[in-house]
Image 1 (spheres, rainbow, N blue to C red):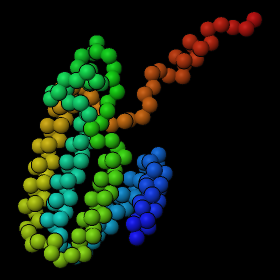
Image 2 (image 1 turned 90 degrees about the vertical axis):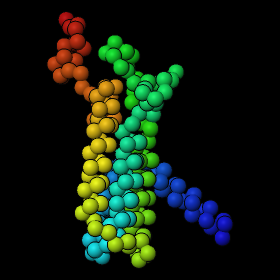
Image 3 (image 1 turned 120 degrees about the vertical axis):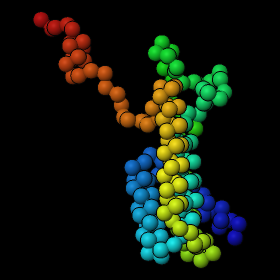
Image 4 (image 1 turned 30 degrees about the vertical axis):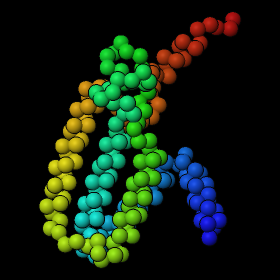
Length: 181
Protein backbone atom coordinates (compact mmCIF):
# COMPACT_ATOMS: atom_id res chain seq x y z
CA UNK A 1 0.00 0.00 0.00
CA UNK A 2 2.83 2.37 0.92
CA UNK A 3 4.62 1.61 -2.35
CA UNK A 4 1.49 2.34 -4.41
CA UNK A 5 1.02 5.64 -2.61
CA UNK A 6 4.66 6.53 -3.32
CA UNK A 7 4.25 5.59 -7.02
CA UNK A 8 1.05 7.66 -7.28
CA UNK A 9 2.82 10.58 -5.63
CA UNK A 10 5.73 10.33 -8.09
CA UNK A 11 3.34 10.15 -11.05
CA UNK A 12 1.39 13.16 -9.78
CA UNK A 13 4.63 15.12 -9.29
CA UNK A 14 5.76 14.13 -12.80
CA UNK A 15 2.61 15.59 -14.38
CA UNK A 16 2.78 18.62 -12.12
CA UNK A 17 6.36 19.25 -13.27
CA UNK A 18 5.35 18.85 -16.91
CA UNK A 19 2.59 21.45 -16.46
CA UNK A 20 4.98 24.10 -15.09
CA UNK A 21 5.80 25.88 -18.39
CA UNK A 22 2.16 25.84 -19.57
CA UNK A 23 0.80 28.65 -17.40
CA UNK A 24 -2.09 29.60 -19.69
CA UNK A 25 -3.46 26.06 -19.86
CA UNK A 26 -3.04 25.60 -16.10
CA UNK A 27 -5.04 28.76 -15.42
CA UNK A 28 -7.72 27.79 -17.97
CA UNK A 29 -8.13 24.47 -16.16
CA UNK A 30 -8.39 26.28 -12.83
CA UNK A 31 -11.03 28.65 -14.18
CA UNK A 32 -13.03 25.65 -15.42
CA UNK A 33 -12.81 24.25 -11.88
CA UNK A 34 -13.93 27.63 -10.46
CA UNK A 35 -16.91 27.59 -12.83
CA UNK A 36 -17.87 24.05 -11.80
CA UNK A 37 -17.59 25.03 -8.13
CA UNK A 38 -19.75 28.12 -8.69
CA UNK A 39 -22.36 26.01 -10.49
CA UNK A 40 -22.36 23.52 -7.61
CA UNK A 41 -22.86 26.25 -4.99
CA UNK A 42 -25.60 27.85 -7.10
CA UNK A 43 -27.31 24.51 -7.71
CA UNK A 44 -27.44 23.47 -4.04
CA UNK A 45 -28.12 27.05 -2.81
CA UNK A 46 -25.78 26.65 0.13
CA UNK A 47 -22.22 26.33 1.38
CA UNK A 48 -21.82 30.09 1.53
CA UNK A 49 -19.57 29.90 4.58
CA UNK A 50 -17.27 27.54 2.65
CA UNK A 51 -17.21 30.03 -0.22
CA UNK A 52 -16.47 32.88 2.19
CA UNK A 53 -13.57 30.95 3.73
CA UNK A 54 -12.32 30.16 0.23
CA UNK A 55 -12.49 33.86 -0.66
CA UNK A 56 -10.49 34.85 2.43
CA UNK A 57 -7.87 32.20 1.65
CA UNK A 58 -7.57 33.37 -1.97
CA UNK A 59 -7.23 36.98 -0.78
CA UNK A 60 -4.37 35.87 1.48
CA UNK A 61 -2.70 34.09 -1.45
CA UNK A 62 -3.15 37.16 -3.64
CA UNK A 63 -1.39 39.33 -1.08
CA UNK A 64 1.55 36.91 -1.09
CA UNK A 65 1.58 36.90 -4.89
CA UNK A 66 1.64 40.70 -5.11
CA UNK A 67 4.18 41.22 -2.31
CA UNK A 68 7.95 41.28 -2.71
CA UNK A 69 10.03 38.53 -1.13
CA UNK A 70 11.88 41.06 1.01
CA UNK A 71 9.63 43.86 2.23
CA UNK A 72 11.74 47.03 2.44
CA UNK A 73 9.44 48.37 5.18
CA UNK A 74 9.95 45.44 7.51
CA UNK A 75 13.44 44.06 7.11
CA UNK A 76 16.40 45.74 5.49
CA UNK A 77 18.45 42.99 3.95
CA UNK A 78 21.76 42.45 2.20
CA UNK A 79 19.96 40.51 -0.55
CA UNK A 80 17.92 41.83 -3.46
CA UNK A 81 15.89 44.91 -2.56
CA UNK A 82 13.45 47.04 -4.48
CA UNK A 83 14.90 50.31 -5.77
CA UNK A 84 13.53 53.31 -3.90
CA UNK A 85 15.07 56.06 -6.08
CA UNK A 86 15.54 56.42 -9.81
CA UNK A 87 19.30 56.37 -9.34
CA UNK A 88 19.22 52.99 -7.56
CA UNK A 89 20.37 49.89 -9.38
CA UNK A 90 17.60 47.82 -10.99
CA UNK A 91 16.80 44.65 -9.09
CA UNK A 92 14.18 42.25 -10.43
CA UNK A 93 10.92 41.82 -8.56
CA UNK A 94 10.90 38.53 -6.66
CA UNK A 95 7.52 37.49 -5.32
CA UNK A 96 6.93 36.16 -1.86
CA UNK A 97 4.63 33.55 -3.45
CA UNK A 98 5.72 32.45 -6.96
CA UNK A 99 3.11 32.09 -9.71
CA UNK A 100 3.24 28.29 -9.83
CA UNK A 101 2.72 27.94 -6.07
CA UNK A 102 -0.03 30.57 -6.26
CA UNK A 103 -1.80 28.59 -8.98
CA UNK A 104 -1.32 25.28 -7.20
CA UNK A 105 -2.66 26.60 -3.89
CA UNK A 106 -5.74 28.12 -5.55
CA UNK A 107 -6.44 24.94 -7.48
CA UNK A 108 -6.11 22.79 -4.36
CA UNK A 109 -8.35 25.20 -2.43
CA UNK A 110 -11.11 24.96 -5.03
CA UNK A 111 -10.81 21.16 -5.09
CA UNK A 112 -11.14 20.97 -1.30
CA UNK A 113 -14.05 23.45 -1.29
CA UNK A 114 -15.77 21.46 -4.04
CA UNK A 115 -15.43 18.26 -2.03
CA UNK A 116 -16.77 20.04 1.05
CA UNK A 117 -20.01 20.80 -0.82
CA UNK A 118 -20.86 17.10 -0.70
CA UNK A 119 -20.99 17.02 3.12
CA UNK A 120 -23.98 18.66 4.78
CA UNK A 121 -22.09 19.43 8.00
CA UNK A 122 -20.27 22.24 6.12
CA UNK A 123 -23.53 23.83 4.99
CA UNK A 124 -23.92 26.32 7.84
CA UNK A 125 -26.97 28.53 7.31
CA UNK A 126 -25.89 32.16 6.97
CA UNK A 127 -27.23 35.29 5.33
CA UNK A 128 -24.85 35.36 2.37
CA UNK A 129 -25.27 39.03 1.32
CA UNK A 130 -23.64 40.13 4.60
CA UNK A 131 -20.68 37.80 3.99
CA UNK A 132 -20.35 39.11 0.44
CA UNK A 133 -20.41 42.75 1.58
CA UNK A 134 -17.87 42.03 4.31
CA UNK A 135 -15.57 40.26 1.85
CA UNK A 136 -15.81 43.14 -0.67
CA UNK A 137 -14.91 45.68 2.04
CA UNK A 138 -12.02 43.48 3.19
CA UNK A 139 -10.81 43.08 -0.40
CA UNK A 140 -11.00 46.83 -1.09
CA UNK A 141 -9.12 47.77 2.09
CA UNK A 142 -6.46 45.12 1.55
CA UNK A 143 -5.89 46.04 -2.09
CA UNK A 144 -5.77 49.74 -1.21
CA UNK A 145 -3.00 49.03 1.30
CA UNK A 146 -1.16 46.80 -1.20
CA UNK A 147 -1.40 49.36 -4.01
CA UNK A 148 -0.17 52.12 -1.68
CA UNK A 149 2.84 49.90 -0.86
CA UNK A 150 3.47 49.31 -4.57
CA UNK A 151 3.35 53.05 -5.28
CA UNK A 152 5.58 53.90 -2.31
CA UNK A 153 8.31 51.45 -3.33
CA UNK A 154 7.73 51.79 -7.10
CA UNK A 155 7.28 48.19 -8.16
CA UNK A 156 4.90 46.36 -10.46
CA UNK A 157 4.43 42.70 -9.47
CA UNK A 158 2.90 41.65 -12.77
CA UNK A 159 5.00 40.51 -15.70
CA UNK A 160 3.64 42.43 -18.67
CA UNK A 161 5.90 40.79 -21.22
CA UNK A 162 9.17 41.83 -22.73
CA UNK A 163 9.75 45.57 -22.79
CA UNK A 164 10.52 47.22 -26.13
CA UNK A 165 13.04 50.02 -26.20
CA UNK A 166 12.45 51.60 -29.57
CA UNK A 167 11.02 50.99 -32.95
CA UNK A 168 12.31 48.97 -35.84
CA UNK A 169 13.93 52.03 -37.36
CA UNK A 170 16.00 52.80 -34.26
CA UNK A 171 17.65 49.38 -34.26
CA UNK A 172 18.03 49.32 -38.04
CA UNK A 173 19.82 52.67 -38.16
CA UNK A 174 22.33 51.68 -35.50
CA UNK A 175 22.90 48.20 -36.91
CA UNK A 176 23.60 49.32 -40.49
CA UNK A 177 26.16 52.05 -39.88
CA UNK A 178 28.60 50.90 -42.56
CA UNK A 179 27.98 50.28 -46.25
CA UNK A 180 29.56 47.80 -48.62
CA UNK A 181 30.87 49.77 -51.62
